[in-house]
Length: 218
Ligand SMILES: [Zn+2]
Image (cartoon, rainbow, N blue to C red):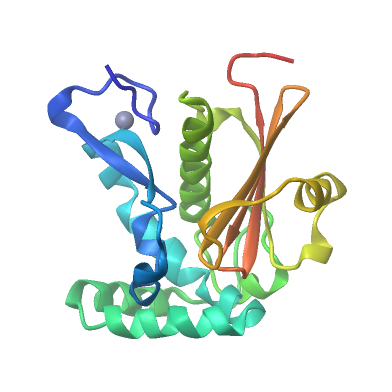
């Protein structure tokens, strides 16, 4: 029986689906014909998969300004994609709601770069998606479940120069893995029982995460 990459429990056949890594939404429609390999997927419960849908949309739309700042070419592709999706009434209402949520201040939580503070980003939702993607990558690499509680550190970087030395080493020495480098790539290494991940989104910003070994190996 397969286990769910998101909750670690067994999956009954009728509840089984696949979780895309990263979420399928993250691939702008205009780029999809250029992606040759099949999308990466891991097994999950239908229910677990569905739980992230709104947070994924939030992540995609709300962090888009960072891509526009850092990678104008990709920023344009994403904005065009946003315009297309606006035709869908459900997406239009999400976008409207997102815009209404923008406020001059934010609360504390995971460490966000300064330009993000212009919006009141819901860090819990952003972190939820980041951790989920990390769980999926771990499952893809090891075929095993990574509990979110194993996460020791999660930080968002807009500029490579801002990276902490440990993450900078990863960036410089570990080759990125990707099926569509302009959309998403990841770097992963296990060092002395610490699992380090660098997730790059749309060539615009990077999340770096550190996890304790879920099996307690040192
Ligand atoms: Zn599950």
